[in-house]
Length: 186
Image (cartoon, rainbow, N blue to C red; front, side):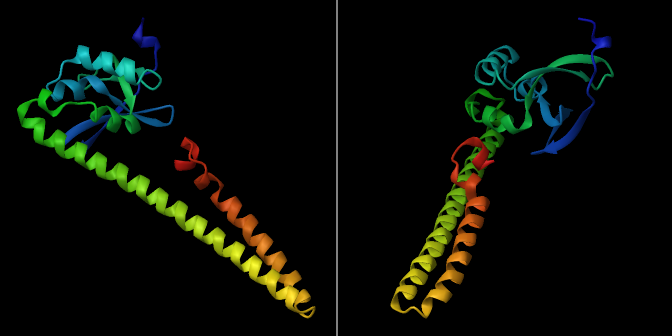
């Protein structure tokens, strides 16, 4: 392949846990060249490259990047949002001894962040259902008041219209939250 005819993507260096991490904007998403990360951790590229191809086959891509030496290189890159998942596959006992504590700390942070995400979503879901239950309660109360006297019928019509609109607004607002698929939790 003639890399001169392939577009290259300039990398941006960001600081991450006292290390420099290369980020490449590719198709509007941040990607991470993996070989420098793998080798920087003291892991063998061949075994990690195989793991990436097996576990992240649908998301890894080869991107031509201008390296620090100014030359274009074809690099296996992983979307940044998947880097955390890959990091969780690393055994701290297989990295350079000086990186072991950092890997363990980072994996603990990933666990905490994931738990926080899920528990926050579940709490939001519960709050949404509590809100829906209140709307339904208000509707039932309005209906009961209307049956007590015909005088309440006018008020009942008004409240029924309001409650119907509240319910529809709630459904419109919370449809994605109720969907446990990827789109609902994004």
